[in-house]
Length: 180
Ligand code: FES
Image (cartoon, rainbow, N blue to C red; front, side, top):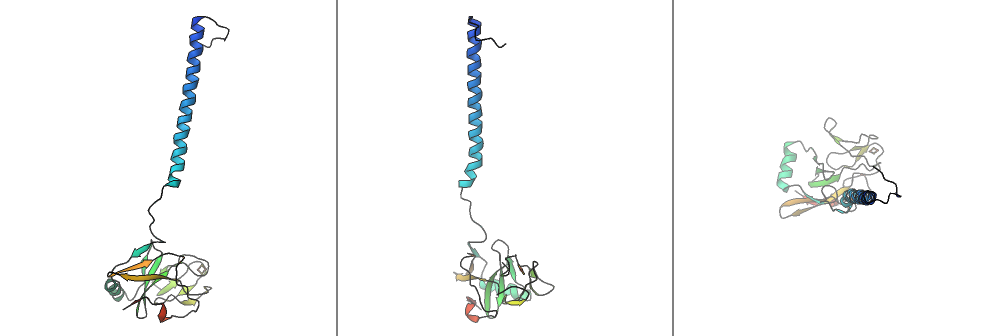
């Protein structure tokens, strides 16, 4: 029962004190809940997640293993989804082509029926072994990621800021970093 402040009896005084305590408790509970919710929202922004995929160095196996995979698949490019690249059986070795279309940046898929890369966005075509442009609006070949042979394992550096950009639309043997 709500008692008016004019109630100066002992029962009235106790009632007012309880109401005040209840209000304080409610305020405190609300503040704690709000703090917990805010923390739950903010903390994930500061947590550093392990970086996977594009931007890191990705091991793709031994050179001999990759070459034997090419041999048994009529040189079908090997897709690495996380790293956004294809391993190519380039003339005389192995290259890694960044699958970002050089026209407007769509992800370029391998088209087995056409035996070449075919960008679904505006139809650019790229060669199976070299990723040079065969047709469409793409201004230059697919960029290449750097590859190193480290202790018998091929490592592809998928840093998109450190790609090998090829201005000329032709295969240049100097761009080959892993030879057979
Ligand atoms: S983005 Fe690939 S052809 Fe336009």
